[in-house]
Length: 164
Image 1 (spheres, rainbow, N blue to C red):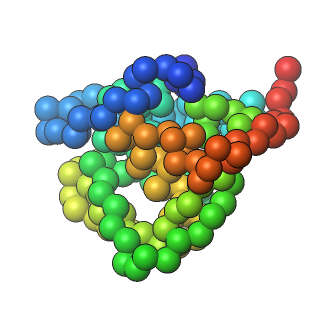
Image 2 (cartoon, rainbow, N blue to C red; image 1 turned 120 degrees about the vertical axis):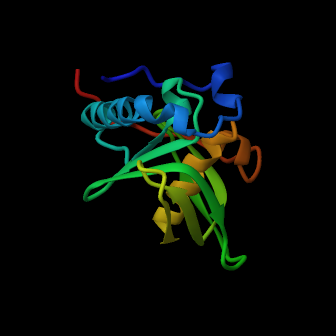
Image 3 (cartoon, one colour; image 1 turned 45 degrees about the vertical axis):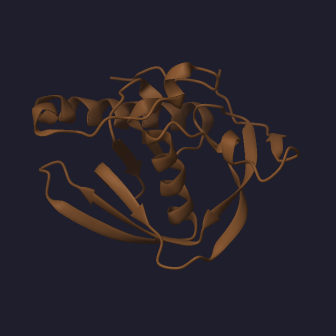
């Protein structure tokens, strides 16, 4: 089901999410379906969007969903950074479409997570995927890209594709 995406200023976006537990197993597939449907609806409207965090749709759980060539589900993810190399880029967000923020992110990361069956997994990330999952992971801790702006002149309004 397509869910409403919480937007910039909603206090729920600034809350720290709770771990997904075995007790959540029945609800998990529904949350994943909602994340998928919401991401696809956003893509249809804005022509963009690769991932979404559960808190963005009002589910205060440590759950990320990414769709590239196929779906990726990250339950209770943790990030580590194999080196300290960073870079600066413009970051956008489904919670504030049309606004870009200049942020600094790690160039490489490793995401440690559980799959839908609670099996431990990990994936090495570099470049845009490293940045993307750092962005989504921040949502789990109540941190928005606007809070990571490199300075007070790092916010930019962009034109977004909209189908009306």
